Length: 340
Ligand code: NAD
Ligand code: TDX
Image (cartoon, rainbow, N blue to C red; front, side, top):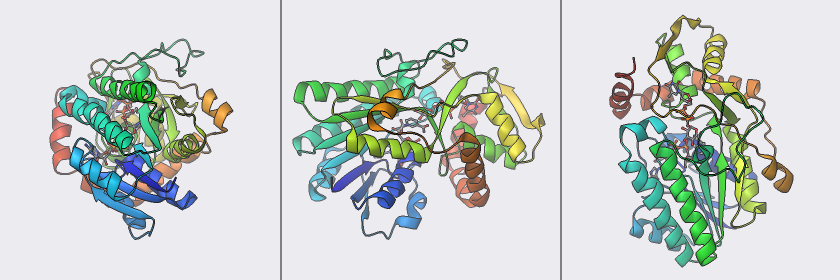
């Protein structure tokens, strides 16, 4: 591995991954990003001058853009983070999700294969496994849990995974798939639960909790997701799926209360709102395969990770205030006006 194409590297996880890879290797990292509402080059301002880092603006759905970057930069490894990533947006409109997440992945796979890329890693999600019962804590998603998708977002991510699998089986193209649980940490776009609640709590506004607040998510600090992807890139077997999780299940309402407590705010700010349609009840990942086979374990304990995250959002208020203007305000109005 020498020249790694990181698609979607200007987003939350991709930008954290690029920094992790630069710190832990001497690979050349080429960040290929369309810069949608979620892509922000400010996320990478601290490493933009690194001699091992290059940014190329482009769209994974556009053949010419992808051919140019893969051949021009002599890419040998592709890590695909590029996606439409927010479930609520996929409920408001699914077209862009199918276009980017399915057609974009197909385009990237096809050109990577024809250009003799020697490794392709698809960053997928635990949401492709559907929803778990709340009261059976011993049951978690394993790599052989059947795909059962409930939102347009998860359907589009699962479709991409199926294409990856097909390219491996039909063409023997060396594809790896990772499926991770909910990430949190610096640079997460404040449409997602944790940064949204930090921002709203800071401003003394209402914190919109969907339904009864008893949906469960398994939270992983973003740097631990990055280290897991790095292990899979180095030691994973082509054609395999690797689950990545924090073994850290929380009710949404408890996360919201914790954020309020850590910010010194009262629970009076909480408001229960109309539920997300098709809302998956519980996600929980069994990550024993990556732990046993590749020796990966998460390093961050949740109390440490959430304090670090809140500290980052406190210190970087100008970052989130900027991204919470413009297009974001239209989205917020559309998504929440019918719920509140
Ligand atoms: P994000 O929304 O913060 O970032 C997505 C990035 O992709 C942005 O920089 C955007 O500009 C870019 N992008 C979108 N369409 C593109 C296109 N057509 N061509 C090139 N770039 C494009 O997302 P994230 O939270 O960082 O998630 C990254 C990946 O990880 C996604 O594939 C997501 O499905 C997956 N994932 C996310 C989580 C999570 O908790 N956030 C958990 C598991 C898996
Ligand atoms: O305002 C809110 N109120 C609320 O109660 C928001 C935005 C969310 N929620 C709930 C819905 C979920 O149960 O919080 C939980 C987490 O919501 P999100 O942050 O939107 O994440 P989720 O839907 O679980 O999906 C995330 O994890 C898997 C990422 O967005 C995906 O990209 C990833 O694949």
